[in-house]
Image (cartoon, rainbow, N blue to C red; front, side, top):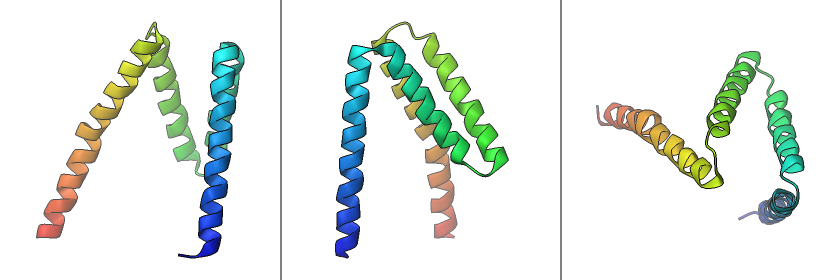
Length: 107
């Protein structure tokens, strides 16, 4: 493996862990500021997308996610909802796509 790739991987991991530690502390100390930072990070990512259709799709998905999470009521319910959304996506999107690709490869 290329040494530069290993160094880059370690740098990225270190930055991610530092970002996580800051967000975790913010979440514990000031929920309001945490939410502002979370929203800023999401908006920065969405705004970095150049394709306008994809950008609109991401905004719609995020608005839908926020709407669903707002009604959760508790942190435990938010976790349960997130898990449910994930497994619904696996079953309704990933699994059919994998099956389709598998059948295409077999034929």
